[in-house]
Length: 339
Image 1 (cartoon, rainbow, N blue to C red):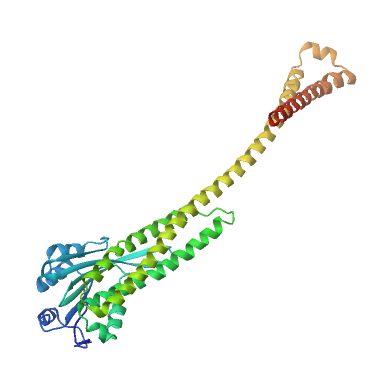
Image 2: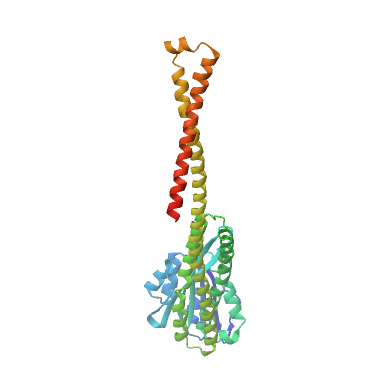
């Protein structure tokens, strides 16, 4: 879909509205340059633009593909293809939404093909139209305006990631465990953002060298400086998320150790309880057999106390002595080992 098509000459826009495609192509030889903006065009629309402006078929094929790596390539007739990755941060979903802008740049025209919602260029066109001294520098000024907006739009993404990373960092380093899935997700988003930003470090200097408009050089260097800052920040965020992930795993390990200690303590208590009841169960089971000897000899209260209650007390006393001696031997061995 064609968003806008304008002819710029002598630092100003010649027409108030959009220029038809065929007329725009005809004006390419009348001085100035034409800026055609497309948003997610169909194959038929791209084919029409390709035939009208004589674009290379491989360059058009790259513009049709999404998730391309940022790059700059020179094609026939001094036509360059510049591919940029745009980004926008969704705070609610904690995700970076990516878009793509393919820029066909020639001395007489600029064609932008935008893919994805995070690729708005209306502001770039409006700002450039308010700078006639830059607009008069030719088609390279449009490329600078696009680069400037794309790089400026990276700053809110860095800030959004920074806020979420600070939350996770505060949680982890306070001693509480953060959801590991959230850390992995943020690291994945930061890595994807890094892959969109870092290749531009090679693209922007190439544009600086190729641009033959002297007034634009300071502005292109300014874009490069901003890009370097964004690249450093996103690289630092990736490293920080890696550190936070390791710290979070350590916190989880400590929590699991505490749970294991509590479970071991519980098992020890249950084992002691089972050990106490084992001889008692044996004694009560033995005297509960009701064989002839017991029936004939336990006929008084005294005999019941001696054989019944005494039969329970004696094994408990022996068990207590055995556990006590075992504990003394363990403590003695530990003391010898320490010395």
